[in-house]
Amino acid sequence: MAELDPTSPPKNKYYRPELDVLRFLAFSLVFLAHSLKGDPQPRITHLLKGFASVYYSSVVASTFGLNLFFALSAFLICELLLRERTVNGTVQIKQFYFRRILRIWPLYYLGLALGVLVALLSQSHSDLVAIGWFGIFLSTWTIPAHGFVANPVSPLWSISVEEQFYAVVPWLTRFFNRNMLYGFCLVVIVVSNAWLLYLGRVRAPMYRIWENSFVQFEPFAAGILLCLILRGRLPRIAIWQRLIVIAAGWYCWFFACHRLHVLFDLNQNPGGWSLVGGYGLGALGSALLLIAFLGVDSKLFPGWTIYLGRISFGLYVYHEFALYFSSKTLTMYLESVEIQNYALKVLRAVSVEVLLPLALTVLAAILSYRFFETPFLKIKKRHALIESQPIAGRE
Image (tube, rainbow, N blue to C red; front, side, top):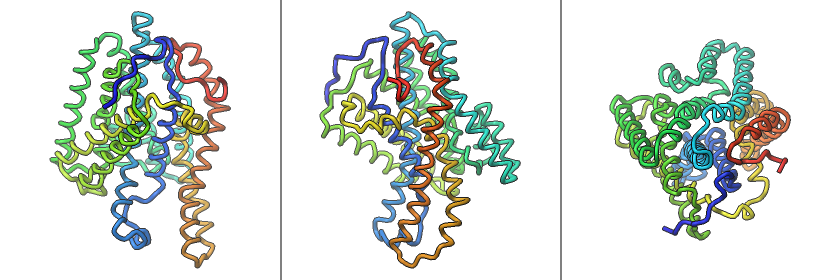
């Protein structure tokens, strides 16, 4: 492809605003996957006719935005820890965990508390047990065993994967050299694919595959591999080349869903080799999107996309609550109003199912970041050994 830029940021500093934009893109894809309907709808099928299957596959493919989050997280954490080892001669593991706790736990446990409130108000007491497993980061073991959780905290199972990754990555970067890290990634990919082959052979349901730590570790390996390959350098790629790489990354996801059917409904498991290929394409597509964005001049992006990327954790935590509130309250009220015009019906559906929940999500995330998360982030910043993402609005 294109050569790598030999220049790189100072070893004691690593912040790329364009990756905040990528975070916002990842959230937007996850939000669309959760708010739009990926299963066939008579009106959409009638309207789009032969393109309906492409639309449905595109909506489902947006789910891989979560894989993009994982690959980006692995890339950044590995990059920061390797820089810390270069600057200080070692990785200070206690400091790493202290910083991660300050960034993740306050908002995460607030989200779980909101989930408990919803469970109590809806008298879904079985959800309380499930949320308890979320609280000790074992949801990726209990969901495959007992099924999906019908509560707005359900997307937060991914935090368990993140925390399990954090449990090992500082030790790896402290004691492993680069060749050993390459070997570790290879082992992770082999284990992940072996598990996918098994899940395909037994025709496991979707929730046993997607919400599975072994499966989701593959995009983490992809992020670490990209970090090791780049060695802190930035890809020197023309804009038109980056657009091609973005298209290639998206096509990886689309092919995995449209042809391999890896994100299937109910018990329509496509088999082990389809799962291996599809989830491999999910990780590859995430890595390609990382390459496409890494090194782009941040001036090319609107400032609000960088800001929303910085508060993307809040967007992720609150979005399912916004969708839940909209569906349980506003949807019933608005649908009680009779509308004859088809175009107005579509506009109402888009407003209630997408635009209004998105606005509520952004508002909640802004307020949460400003008044709840920022005090913890200030403490975290004082303990940062490698200067990274600034606190939004306080540069």
